[in-house]
Image 1: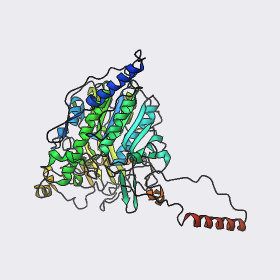
Image 2: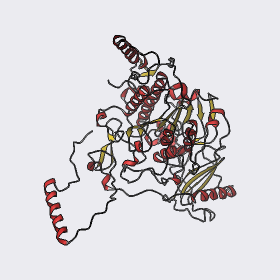
Image 3: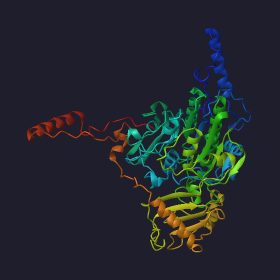
Image 4: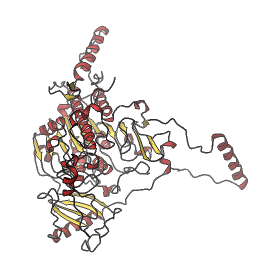
Length: 598
């Protein structure tokens, strides 16, 4: 069936998920009638999560449907939705011109996280969510995992889905992985997920699911578990396709058994692509990138509405916890807005690391509230394991905290500091020095730390502009230039009181040298616990053309040592045989020709 909205009509519940004890139907005719009725109702009623407007766009229905009664497990269903590159301003309740009725409603009925932090780029946020550890404790403190690198989330880290499986959860991931795949052991299904449907890389075409990392390094990037999902190479927009898969998972799962769903949407990361009808409400936006971005976010909002309706339809909602988060700040050059925060994706200014986030659940004690306590993406690991009635090994040193009582009951957060990062490879601050760091810290190193109200940055924090909403209109350039600043010559250290100055406009490093020294010492203490950086060079074996045109595992360890030849004659004979084999198979036996797709 063709995609409809940001997901197709809800699939009919599976028999396994909806067998009612004591009501098995004995007669075949009656059973057939029951199935036919159920299918009809499922497609004509449940699937109508959207209704067509006269203009040709779609909007979510406002009516609520009663949830089927189920015998709930004591363990809640855990639904973690991660958006990609959504800016801090880019949600209705933060004043955006982009319409996000679903996110606004879910957040208003739940708990808005208004002091919530993630990492400035993709891989770091995802690794910290799934391990509960800072980057310095996994070796991923520099940049992202690139598709050509023999690198992945270290295998000795127990992941969140692995811990949830230990206590009986069914675990499913849909969407973007971006935690490495050079070995089969790095794949999502080997890191705790029962099923995986999505992409391995950081970005790609939303319709063809192809990605070129560099000229000549292009391949297909859509997987079903451990194999390329060629059957889905049919031009379906990824936001729609992922939502349909989530609906199918929920339709086939027994709601009396706990489930963990990690939904990592590709949207709203570049390339900026969206189905045409989502542009309808944004024709007034002059900036083409902002207009495309708005259309993508509207489609994402609609998709999350359909996920929520599926949770209600299939009996999960009343015992579920829905967490929504962006993975980093928005990128203004790609349509995102973090106003009034400073900076953007890829920086350690607030615009790069302060994220949209909320929790929605019938299980919350204080609904309709705002949490201004300090929360970090590492906190979800211990929080969700605790909610699942799981155990965290005493010898595991986590950087996250269990913050459920903070969110649900409004108690004080156990967290008082956040190490945003220490990147010993990124030392581009030309004027940074040990002297500038009072002999405590080399301020050439890019680092950032938050302790209570205070935030300290060293090195080169990244692009530091404030980009107001006017920059996306025809009034933009002049207004934008008025907000631009030039980093002071010789500057390599900054101090802000984030509580009093969340927009980082007043640098206090010269006024409070004592506080600067204290935070530098804290950085130094953290750095003593850091593991070596994992950032290997490109491996030519990663080229998809050597792997059937697909991005995927390529690395094979040669554990078996070759047996030495007995004599020179034997070596010569083997060499002759190898030449004959190459002559039969061609000059490049490891290169396989394939049909170019997409």
